[in-house]
Length: 230
Ligand code: URA
Image 1 (cartoon, helix red, strand yellow):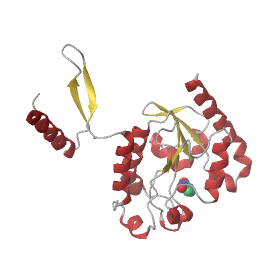
Image 2 (tube, protein in one colour; image 1 turned 180 degrees about the horizontal axis):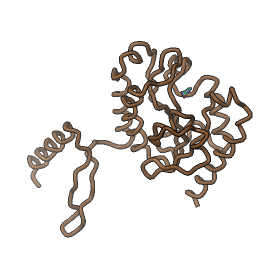
Image 3 (tube, rainbow, N blue to C red; image 1 turned 90 degrees about the horizontal axis):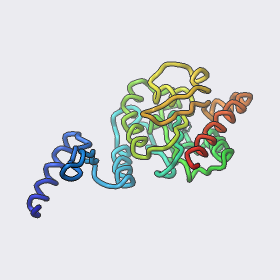
């Protein structure tokens, strides 16, 4: 193939990408079956960095975009086997631009460490990337606006297990209105990835008697991760 054909091909793929096409089917070799080649250029890291850039300047939710101090994209290991999804940044997270750094975050750190992991080994993010004013509950249209970002984070990180922290994360990922107390303890999946639903650490701070249930959920995660390694 000549250089000009390669250039033309690249331009064509770019134009498809601009139209929102994410995969094209290319023949592997003559006689081999077609394979799906990612059209979004770059490695996982590059794609997540590009997504981060996009999220940092997002203005889809007027009120949140106007009132936020920082966008909280998420933090941790982009090769993580375990991903935690919370609800939305609170005051501390909004100030620092990092997820789960306040009191609930300190408890989440202990929860992660209880199964022999560190925050640096997992990936932590939220359904909403901006703080709802006065920590009000996320509105349905805000969840809708922001869930495209969460979907991409999950698609690209491809964790082996997702831990949904609290009602909003569990209901958003599983597209259900069922309460967290009913969702926890049951097996769920998000696009073929097992989802373990558990109580939000902020809830646990108010209801420490439910810590035992979260410990049960974490043990389940630990044994699933161990299975994946054997
Ligand atoms: N609560 C959340 O759901 N997420 C955070 O990042 C902090 C508190």
